[in-house]
View 1 (cartoon, rainbow, N blue to C red):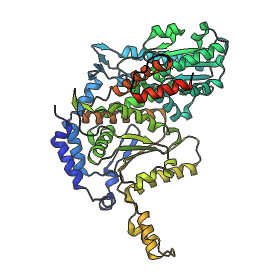
View 2 (spheres, rainbow, N blue to C red):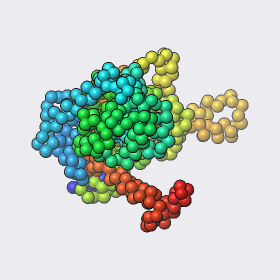
View 3 (cartoon, rainbow, N blue to C red):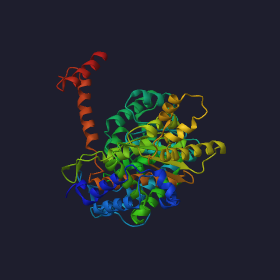
View 4 (tube, rainbow, N blue to C red):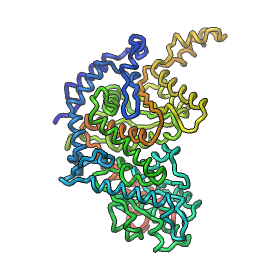
Length: 547
């Protein structure tokens, strides 16, 4: 199978990209008063206005042709059907089964996985109820008030960021604290303010051996014992999400409080599994179920909506358009909603870990970009820092703006100001401000002519900067589920077009292996240093500082 950049569809898009060079979106809007309506779609409670993009109908048609030539729809259907699409690890990819409410079976190697998925959801429901009702108590009889969720990567980012986003839905009386970094300062700061008798530790590690997660859990265990708890009391205060039941039981956990994981669920797609237990403990099981239902609705939309109305398909194709035909090296996410401030970091892992690959198919090295740097921050903070680069920098940076039309318990003036900034930024990025307009604004400024011309040059905004705007009525659990799922499938579309395996992460695995090798040399100070000279020098410095 040849690389995608050798296809006729790719060459067509290269020609079209050159054909619009020198054209400006500002003129397109002036020429077509219906442009916004023409390039807006809605699905699962999310309205996407993609009219402020460097596209026309001919370009869209060519992008759809590219998706068809790369068999995106067939690859999508194979994933949902449980076929082995993670070919390097010989695994199915079925995070979609975790939010499957169709009542239909999902087969992996001929076995229906849905009974086990539904049983795990029931187990989460019962456990959350036992905590919230006060039925599950600590070893001294106190009800649980604090949850310490320990994980890393997807086991940490998903639960933490989704919990933050749904703060208006938090269950009263329960506070959840998230710990990922192996830096001891983090967990020590969290535990220092807690009472071990009303604290529950939730450890999330598929293997029960993840270095950072295991070390933090061991630290929490020692803290619990030092505070007065005993080994036999651990069962009431520690639970695990893991496939390694034996290790968890040996640690001291009650086998009934160990929640399963499956190898067909990747870490960055795992919040829909029992990894989402801390979310359910934070917002209650019913709200957690609605999060899953929102994702299921987007799954259905992705499978059933035609390309021109398909949110993930459109976003994925626009991403390819800018990455490969406009040399965009990054993509910025701008949620104009405080509780959604962590969302860029979530998509950062989802996108960059999935498609940051250099090999297509089974073994063919690619010679084109396969993913942008994902970054961002909440509005309006970014307007006073990095928006400057987006407006006047020389490298194209596509942007996604997100805005809830209604919010919980917020004074109207604040929300109107937030909306005005969000909508104004998308307008400014598209429209810009010409030299002539800037020069005219300085009339009567008492500046001499040379200074006036110079200042007008510096104030000129080129515009023609692409952006998407996503509106939703309110960020409730169902809408958040749809939003997350939409980005999952966007990443899938891009990976399918580039021909990469979006579901392995060998770069991450290499870092783990080398990190463990270095750790051995740090712990055993008599061990011979046999790495490269730089690494040896760094280890020696650490040894000297920690005699």
